[in-house]
Length: 567
Image (cartoon, rainbow, N blue to C red):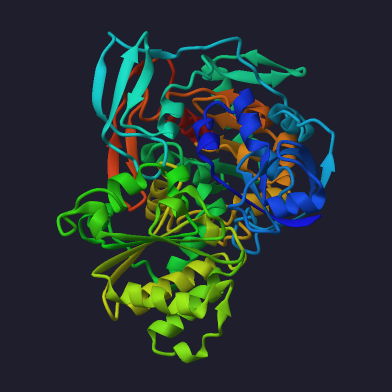
């Protein structure tokens, strides 16, 4: 049966982000959610296995019957199983079609393949730990308040960390995702190097020298990630990329890079989350599911808190969700508007026409949304005292990409003729906004920066990581503050496994399997400190709650920079 695959976050997948070598992570990311009518047509029961095949590859998933998914669609949690069948075409934006893959789905008796097996198929080598390892140190068992969470773009700064036996034993006030990170135990104690089909321990000096030599010997090195580390480390990354005439890219290129492209064309009518909390009486989540991707976004900033001008909190606000799937966020909203996949651009255009007084050109149905619903939505927006739109990767990773976001921004501009309205992209990684700030400040561009010409050059679709790996232009790679092994298309990972690759990460990641060397570092917000930017561009300082036996990102990158400068 032919279906269209869309992938996205689930709360359980997010909780396992720092335990990707676990059985639970494989179980969550190898599920597929299909409408009961499609399962009936395929004669497949809930819990059975199906083989999903695309032009790129095929693998087995466990079926979950789910009426929230539209007929003809197949929802997959983000992860290596979904990306195993993902093609690497970005349509000139740097972001693959995570939300739109044509597939063939058939029943099968084949077993589900473990995550590490998929990575080994791509040329990697699994790395396992023999139990919990603890690189952190605490002077005593204590309770630390007002901890800033380094998980998602919300950067919640009201967590309480309970320290016991030199580790974070539990987190209070945090979400399931933050608890998964702060209590994760899958950390290396020293650098490792792949040799002779196995992993061997090496020293920090050896690992750093290997990395510097790799960069100096490369003609087209790529430095990718950066969204999971501090701004101080990002600045060093820019300096290293310039010194070796390399390309440096961050996670924006595969998530909200298209949002940035739209902002570059028509501007950004944004504001801080504090303004939303205190003023907004209308909240619209479009192509976003914050209850699973940013679990405290609604409770801290948009929906439930009392504000200065919104004294009764939830009672004084209206929340609308526009999405292709009836998500957890949609069920918590006052109104859910379901659109057909790929229909966002058309719906934005229809709303713009209505707001401009040209509603007579709007047909009876636009992308599955009735004309009457569109008129009601437009009137609701115009009558709001302060409206806030939050856009997700449901816009940036589906057909239309940055044009979807551009049309959304232009709708907000039209609404500002009638009332106050803002738009904010739902940035994912805790410091992905920081990468755009530091990169733009030092290099003039927010991501996908190529120094091979001797000056910074920016052209998403050409100088972005996925495109360069797909085209096999890269001959070495440093991965830091990201995990392309879990989130890049299969074709890109296969090339990473063939070229010299170094992973700098506090945790064992799926990218570890593709690397030649992994350098473990202290984790910002846990046993290292640094600056991060919240998703509304507010800079925040993240303090450490533990001491460490490891080097941190800044120390490692400083040593690498010193070596490459010496040549």
